Image 1 (cartoon, rainbow, N blue to C red):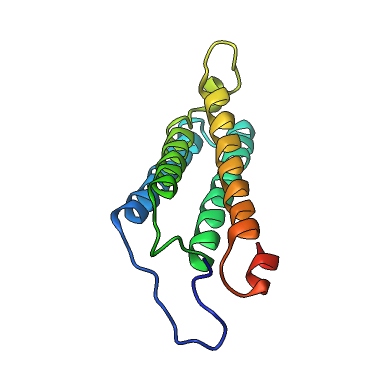
Image 2: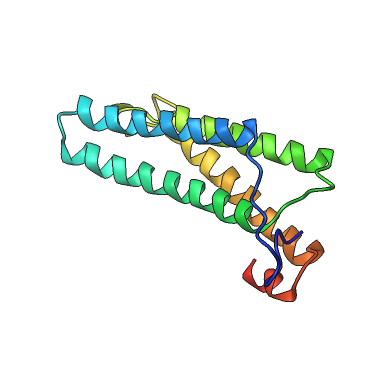
Length: 149
């Protein structure tokens, strides 16, 4: 459902514990990225891995905020949407907890962290795409909202 129609009075999104924990995961991810660079003495490999893992993490956060600012499932907020949200948060937590030093992430045969990180990114992209497909097929609101999705 479209959160707000053009010309209507402003509706502020409600904050909940899920959004707070979602943001805290990114604080932990930023800490892991900072420690990645610090522990590798600012090598070019660490900067490359910082960019290669940091930018997709920023995109994940931006995609979630972009969607939540424009669409809502309330008043329905049914069980299916809650389960999808739990999967989304679990995939974010998995991706951010798998950030390791470049020495570990560059050897995927010995350590599964890079595989788990990329699998989490894939699942997050898939969940985001499915959310927008749902808006296009079942969205309620202005036709422009479906075009924006």
